[in-house]
Image (cartoon, rainbow, N blue to C red; front, side, top):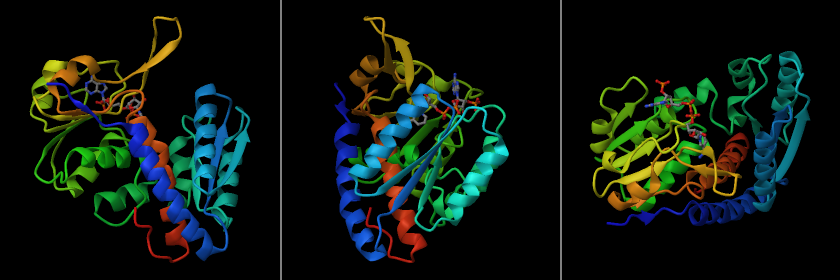
Length: 294
Ligand code: NDP
């Protein structure tokens, strides 16, 4: 068997095109474009690249993008003061603080300071709690992207045995909540799970988000399963430059699975597109407009 590829480039492009249509409609109603602000502290090259690509995607979708770049030595108080200003600014619908933050800043405190209505990363405990209790919420982009991709392989996720490997607040836990909401039967595995291989082999839908290069092997996968690989790991390539690989041994897994996401070009592509979806949802909800149809 050779798995069909869930192509994040294609699926994300479709989503971004839908966002652009909805953004134009919402802009007409608001009399301004929905606005997303990215806050970057320090000069980590990977974070700079992420913020740049998010800004470009926001503008390409017909929304307004603002950036605040603060020096590495910024204090927590200074960052909290900026967030308070952005919370009060009516032209700002979404606030994202690029992680990781420098060590002098308490990340949890910063996340909690963001107005939950503008929390387009979906990391605020209010949004996490609303997701867990089945209330409308802003959902983190990466797990939202995983669900959209899984639904390209399965018309419905109801009743599927879904295994999520990884229990972080930004991927594993919200993904498990979204799968429960889709009526999948969900198992969450982590570093203390016994016999992880056998747990994975039960999965009709296997989602892996652990940050360990090609950790999940081909014989961990149930024949015909759908595999969603969230991992992004940098390893030296044959040309000496770093290349990206996932948490799943792709070549082996693709021989066993029915559907698989590649790395790069898989879930990573979805995350930014879903951030744009959240910005639209936040803009509509804040203005009391009907929720966008995506
Ligand atoms: P974290 O480091 O926050 O969490 C990793 C999770 O994996 C933990 O729950 C940990 O378990 C679990 N884990 C680690 N080692 C093992 C193991 N040997 N067996 C089973 N479980 C294990 O990572 P994130 O959730 O932030 O990210 C995970 C991966 O996804 C990374 O590669 C990251 O780069 C990528 N990522 C990709 C995104 C995208 O856009 N595609 C966005 C966000 C992340 P425990 O809790 O027991 O320690």
